Length: 360
Image (cartoon, rainbow, N blue to C red; front, side, top):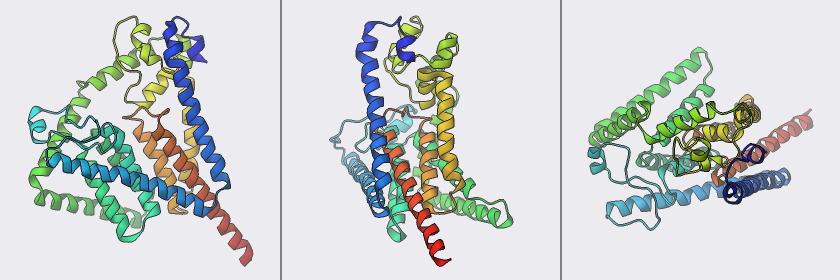
């Protein structure tokens, strides 16, 4: 509604080129998620696990092409999928050592990074034993080779959350945490001893990316600052209800020509959502997603299914820090996984209650 009511001063091309196209995309996302919800409400546990298995296999396709791409880089051959695999945003010295980064069949590392993380979560739910660890290790190797600051931060934040939500603040819980830290330190030390040069290059890359982003010198940081400043200085109606979906494509027109942007989204879900829907949209988002997270969080210790649903929710929230998500196929895909996992949790709880009733 804000798109129509508040943006009457925009050119007619906004309605023709952006509003209807964006509205159709949002509607398609809603219909897809609703279709999965309706199907899952009638699905059995076997059918739900089949759906999750297919989803996990789809990430294997990405993983396969990631290793193929690395082979092409090694042989100095052009990869058959156009992507932004060239290294940028780091000093020339690092670019001369590592000219390329893994994207698989995604366009760039930040598109592929969330899929890598989510495939690990799915692997814990679908696989078991030896193959689970093979899959996770193979995925982590590719994640490192993406040379994506977003991917590294995503993994660290999710791992931190995973450890904290598993902790119980007792002597036993603290000892478990100490063991995890010790294993990580030993693994890091062994990796450094075996691959000293490679680890040094990786650390240099992380330092370069971190210093650039934290100083505000990166183009991404400057764009985000410009958009937030323009939103915060908007009128009361735009602050509360936003500027409307897709209006970032007309940012220069809205801002009076002060800043020119040649794209319609940023790399931050929360900033995009704040610009599009305002304070009201952010509040609704927090309420709805807070309910979903609290549902899985309060039941996370019952089974790995509940914990997987929680981790997917949190993973999607972390993805929003470096991706603009809410009308993408990836966003729909993760929501579909969460819905199906919820169904698995519901059926497993129902079976436990039934067995308890029969015994009594």
